[in-house]
Image (cartoon, rainbow, N blue to C red; front, side, top):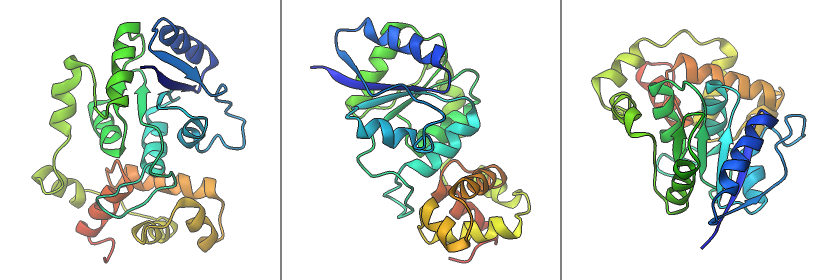
Length: 232
């Protein structure tokens, strides 16, 4: 059985390297055109790959901020009722990035990533992670497991409560965006309601994630409510 994989990367060189690693496996078929940052659809890379028929996306973003922003707004959190911009059928994503902090890795996994892997990964390991993602499993290097799990506290934990109490002040516009996020609106809908661009909305959402120490839209809403910044 073969798995259709789309490789997305901010760097063409990184993408070529990942393509070469996956090409060594007889169980992988590469699909989708190269990810072009200048493409009009570049703001929805995971949806673009899923639309090309990919079963799994191997994604090498430019920075940890891209991980939190794209995953936090691009995946659907069915458990909370807080919806992002992507359809539920979006292909599972494996994030390949250098020096991703354990807290950011945990946030990426909570947001929907099926794996968080370091640059320089071996072909066999990458192929195994792809197979795991296609089977609905989550994976990350064993050496990093302790650090990632230690940061992934449940919503009711003391650490989560402390984070809620230590959130940074929000601007008026950030509060406006947060209120609409809590209503379940997608970025395009928020942009229309507030009369601003979708890019500006994404910037505000990224700032909210940072200030509220959140990895997903749902987590941002819960943290803001606990901190008294939002009435649900």
